[in-house]
Image 1 (cartoon, rainbow, N blue to C red):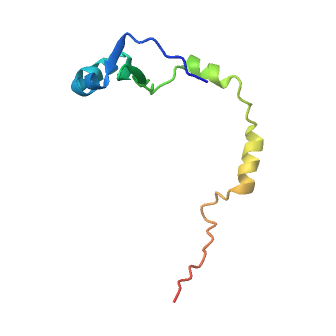
Image 2: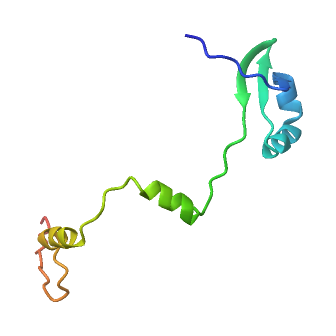
Image 3: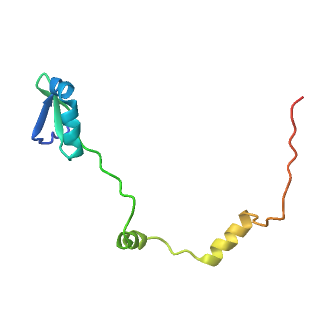
Length: 100
């Protein structure tokens, strides 16, 4: 099964990649894509990475949350009480034995 080759307006030879690397990196930062060739054969692609957003709008969060199951607070608390002891004064000391 072959992968379809994408059409890039910027085709680079291996030599161009080596000699014009700063210019090519600037182009990547601007969102440009490059097809890299060696001896006239397409061997790879240089594509800019997608920037991660730090925030999500309320509308996006609400849309993503719509399909989530509802949380029953009482069942959640009962489950937590069964598995976690959150009493600050109930301390269990486990003796440490050291090999001699």
